[in-house]
Length: 208
Image 1 (cartoon, helix red, strand yellow):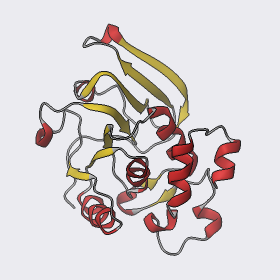
Image 2 (cartoon, rainbow, N blue to C red):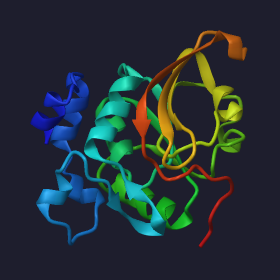
Image 3 (cartoon, rainbow, N blue to C red):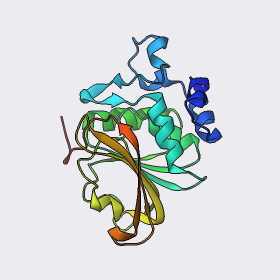
Image 4 (tube, rainbow, N blue to C red):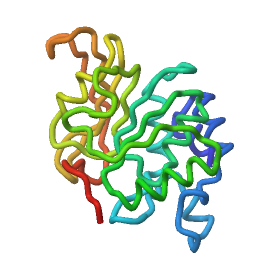
């Protein structure tokens, strides 16, 4: 899998090392064949009609963040916890948010059992994260597709921080890397980086 990622243009050695170390089956349904688990272009269905992203997408988004050790990262969309664990392996201090309570409970326990000390929250982050009011992050990674840029999230990003986020309607999302050079939108540098395919980013908590 890692060799395929390198051939596809993933060059960040810390991303590659993290994904080499993490068995993807820890985060996937038990019945899957290895050919599916380690196909870099295979997204996999998990609970609550959500997916675990393609390994290539996980690697691509992680590389786009330009992470340095001990940076704070807000991840929107914990899902299976695979991307969360990759960020932790890269030395980030991870704060992760999931709106599906079933996934939130299950993944929080899994991450803890594997020794990853991400701080997990139940919520959606559209209007910030009440539990961390006033705190700003070095990086924000969104692993679901937003219809438009959530301004509440940009307020949670430090100056010179980077957000990686897919934006657009389902079937027409584009990956954006936004660097916040100042407080106003005119000071945000937005790079459009290619097509993306994610479940939609939704408001509210789902307690079922």
